[in-house]
Figure (cartoon, rainbow, N blue to C red):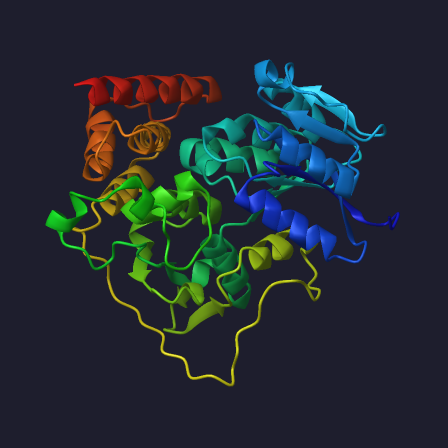
Length: 387
């Protein structure tokens, strides 16, 4: 290992983001080293990763399941930690330079918070941290002098495009969306969508929760909220355009009419690598666009009736406060219910809207209040499902 390598903690190393991050680290030629890995329950994969990457720590966040697992194949020089609290302990370690926050859902909020508290550079794939607690998270990063770098392909694209001008010169941020697998289906056809069909994204290879979010366009609703807090741009200056090829990852329109777009193949290793190496660029394993071939790039406005989740995203981005935490938690619970066969696909967004409308809004919540409202929203979805 190169002694000058950046030491990277990969949280959620067995998920799709984590696997892509490890691919970037493996191809780094010693510039990057995985010093810590974590998984919630895929412990066999975690052990295999430990054998390959030789981290100093592995964290098994499901303590109950981890206590019953045979860890004898773990390398002798790798320390095993169990439980969710161990994630916060690891990210505070002095040796760690970058924390890749790849844990899906609000479960990743605490470790992201602790990493920023300890002035780490956070490569943020866990959009839910900003959706649920955007003002708190960005304020903490500023106060502690921590660097918050987006890993979502759309927000990474905006971050890169913003290098072309000043924030005061920005007219509009434009998030691109593939439209998911059901972009051309009618409302009647959506009524009969199955779990297997919703998991089949036409372009991206993602985990189940994110795949369902893409199918409902809730992922774009959450990304509107994330962009609102990450870039300090009002909701009414954030647009969404459907771009089924997923080659233009997002755009920034400046006040003079110039538009700067970031393009690349639909490969998550590209934005991950940008965040891990920032502020430098190096050759990496991501695919390249073939410029010897003809390209047709399509853009069209999304139909708000077909994708009602978008309006929920705009509402939460405008309102702030506890609204983002409620929407995020309700959606996580609703998606879980759909995957379990307890909710129809077309009921996911209405269920989220119902919980959002029912909650008692708090304009400036504390982190503790965000955690409490998250729990409340999940319970409300369970009641909604039962009815």
